[in-house]
Length: 116
Image (tube, rainbow, N blue to C red; front, side):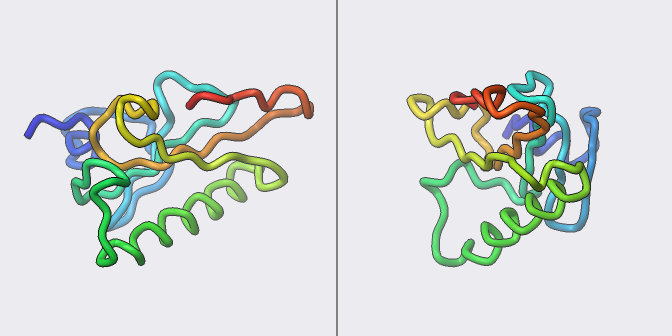
């Protein structure tokens, strides 16, 4: 399998990592759609939301709680977006489950990151 996110998790490819533990790696998106755009990626390869089962319930919940923690640490907890893109028609480019954390807008009208 040739997955760029697996390679980042295995430290084979560099990334601007903002968080890492035994289950997740979070890093800055190389094509940001917001002033703060972090990708939260499980180290276990799961292709997309469509491949989740009830066995992944805690993992997905922990991804969301990690996003909440990172939003606070990055001083954007007053307003941010979380997004899973699913499939090509849903905007998913990399076939590895990941959660987008977007924030850092200073004005109400700036939060126009409609397509992540």
